[in-house]
Length: 120
Image 1: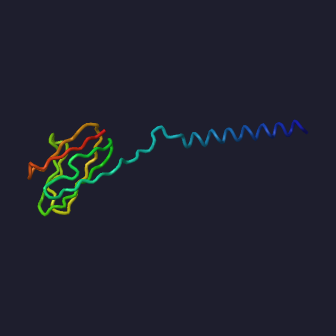
Image 2: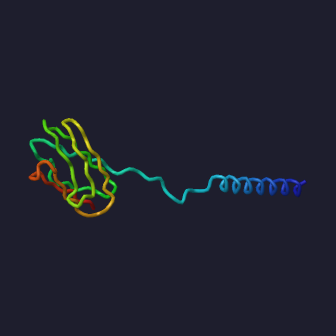
Image 3: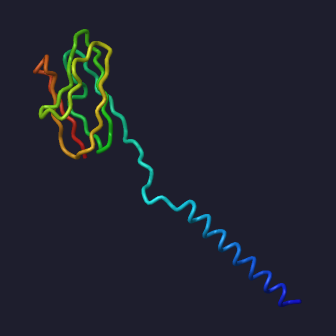
């Protein structure tokens, strides 16, 4: 009788191990963790200036510029890395920065408007 209980227990244990292996094979752990978005930052365009004029962010972060002036502006990378095109009053432009470096930019309509984004 004890041998029957032992064999039954052994068979049950083997069945549970096989079932666990099958479940793991059907749902293997992900080798690529889910990608999460970076932080978001805001830059106001008002009084013919970008505010803040200098912004520090991390790689993967997004920056959104909003034109709060009564005239059109652009947000244009000095090395043509990005360009908003013409932004009318109330319009916004968003850019994601993935590379660690400093990006300087300006408004093509108003060259005295300059600013920078330092990506770490």
